[in-house]
Image 1 (tube, rainbow over the protein chains, first blue to last red):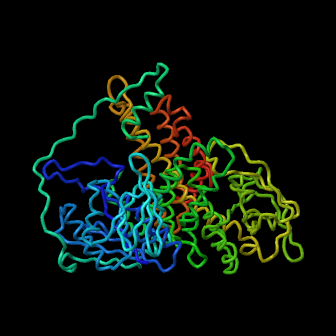
Image 2: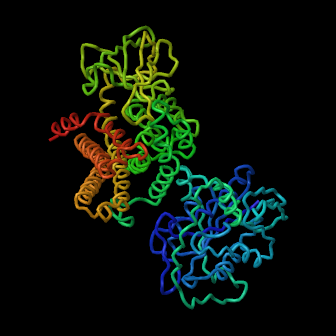
Image 3: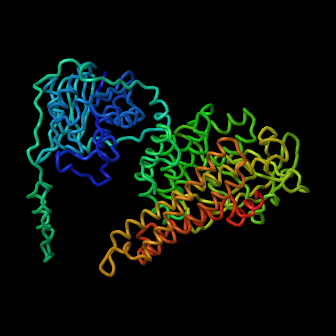
Length: 255
Length: 385
């Protein structure tokens, strides 16, 4: 079994994150780290690898040279190899272009499963896994809270407004996972040592070959600050606060 | 604090990854457990040690040939200890305690002894260990120990009492210092390796401590405890030398631990001072508070530089006896000052057990005492002038 895990680096969620008011893009000048949701996606793959000898896990990403740090972290957690698409021409690429590039990179690896986070903590478009699946003509199981992977299929569970849904697709397939899917492991000291001996392949867009889809690019016409959040609703307990609270939560589909 | 991109000394990519790993571990596994472990008083957090062992934090400092991580340089140990003790001083010291046991074994042990007594400290099922020097009547003056190891056929018979022994009872392996020649002071001290359960060896109740409660200390009693010749560490009379060699390393590592705790207190106080409003403005805008924070930051910067400098000198094979004592003195007194200053900055909340700073203040007091008190540090420094 060969599994590709899509990863990216994002501004540290522990820090203040800002948008560049001119370009409308995320300010990435500060410390960038491997996106937490990608670590969970990697964990899903690594758990399968732990239980099934001979599994190969490759992390695939697109980004500038500072991405090496995040890829090395993924390798030190247990991934076998990393593939990075590095190209100045990709600076500022939108979700569509990113997906086309990642799909091309994944195709070159001939994998059985592609695992991705359901949405990144910076762009949060949540469309890349679906676009990648489309480019590769593979079925997609998205936003999975739980994943059971086997030689022939992937069985997943996702939350719906009223309950949960279980579905399976035969391999090869693309899946995306939520923060409920798995608690990511720490890298280990031994992993950190062996990570430097693992293969990290760097490719340019030209080396990938013809990108699928059109080459259109999102244009940002204007940006504006999000409005201040209105004050929350205060429920005063006059004997029925529990009932009111439950009603409020239900109205927002929170319970 | 220096910005992220300009480091005190250049770190390798691996060292940077190690710092990140330890920071994550301290944030997610250590810090949230600090108060609970403190309140539990005498329950060592064995589960945290196990989790740390799985990812290699408990054995990273041991040589690769015995299954350790191979980061035997003191510089990397300092980077790790600073991060872990930022999470919680007691827990941070607890999970790296096997380094203290390994130091005299590495300094004095034969190849066979190293293999036998260090391999068991590596991997996810690492054993706990303990180092026994202190006695009821012998603290700073460690050459004055009276526990005896008398020659008997095939080995030695140990009689005496040790006190304040970290992890005693919990530990499976012990290095015990005893007099093979009671007429001598330092030249009469010999080190021995013992396993828990050796007949004649027993333990006291957990000692009631002010802080660092993750590490439970007990007395050890030796009543005709037989130790075979092969478990003597080094030659007779070499024990004190081994102990002193241990101190140079452990004092620098403790300086790193103290610096981490000082940084924790500083960051906590800084955040509080920025958000707490009194007299119509954040208290950091009151000069009395801001200047105290300035003193904290300055002393931490100085401690960290001295610690890493001493570590690098030690790794280069220099004699750092005085420098190690300076780093330990500076860092431990900085930690005491910074935790005190954090309690002061948080005021009533600092005094409350709802916030961690009062606990850290109790925890770091130990750093001015263990591995040589501040008074002894000044003595060591003055003798190296």
